[in-house]
Image (cartoon, rainbow, N blue to C red):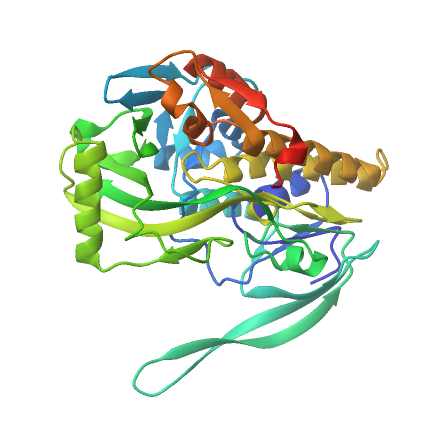
Length: 414
């Protein structure tokens, strides 16, 4: 591996999007990932109209459409009625969103990278980093060894170690980011953590539709995303102390439950919150997870910067961290390309970080209300469930009938 212009750490959707944006801009890029293969399942599922446009501009959308479900509108559904809000015409986006499994998104991005002769280097770990003016990165190529009696144990071993001097480093390595740790950066909690139970269920074609359904109730807001072939992703917030773990709120973590308990939990949640849905024919992937809502106080320095979950975490209901991360990655790639081409200085990176963090300050600090008595109890919980960020989120808020009033940023860190 030669010294690249940019080393991208993390081959999730945001990391691969950054690498593809750089490659299309003529910037030499290497992308490494400690895992041996792409994600099988993830909370990341819904692409906002703005993300659909970004992926279209990078030539990736045509690879996704056969595997996704078009989302034309958001339906707010409560005990006393429902309201349909179209997504067409939102700022900076296509006329629709797209529900597509993360594995398919990663596959499409990897194929697009390959067409530009950029290979994702799986089983490759960033083991050390000196984030200087020109960073020094220690990269380990990992092998796998099996051992054990009675049951097999696979461990990672270092096959090869290499020192790289990339011009820039992008940390897109998730909420437990190695790059952030090497920079000495930890996220600051902005809102209380939330725990969600997520189920992929087969409900049949009779329930199919092109709408994201947001359930409004005493519990708050839940999300039901349609998927192809009669499948749905149902994400319910849990506030039952018998289910919600009392600790480990600072990091995202997954707690497993026995299959009969998960099936019983799903049956209870659907009966209470979505009794109009048909009984599931099949239950697929499930998880119970706590999400912190936090933002890193700094997103980097010099020529080493964070994007996506490495810089921020939010509710999974509308995958805002993923979608905002894609836009951040694209704009960071543009800034780096301008620096490499001599059209900008390093201060462009500080400006990029300031703009990006300001948007998160707004999203996690805004207060919401509504003059509509039907919406008023849910206004605050609706914002993280709406499939938009930035100017598009402000437009969608108005369409829904919610008024957003930003708090002072100084109050957000308490």
